Length: 127
Image 1 (spheres, rainbow, N blue to C red):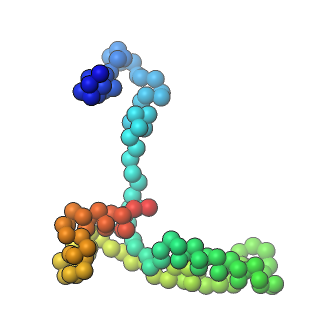
Image 2: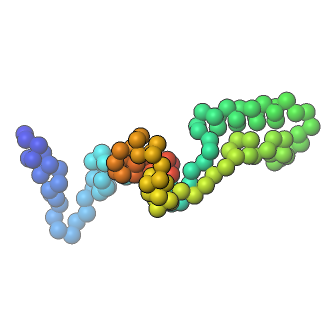
Image 3: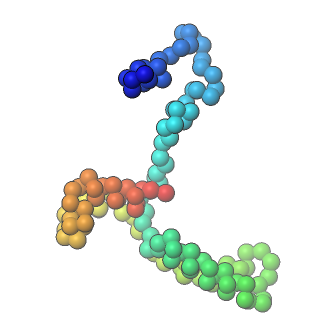
């Protein structure tokens, strides 16, 4: 069976007009294609996953070693939340393009605007 025949077989509709397909074959997900999810607002923060994990570990250690923490939400007062993630900023595609035009390092690292766009999607819009 050729690729074209396989595609035609997978995309043809074997059901009669007016009837709905079985539940397992209604969506694209059953064919192995899934959509990616993106953040609604392009936000970048100063912490990388490894450093955030280490910072959380230190904050948890402070809570465990403190004797006078009452029940409830009081553990949040032991260490400051900005010790885990200090700064976050909005980075729109227009701002990113402007920065790409001005920054020689970015032009060297990402020679085309398409490559830089993929980097921006990963950093700012990716979950």
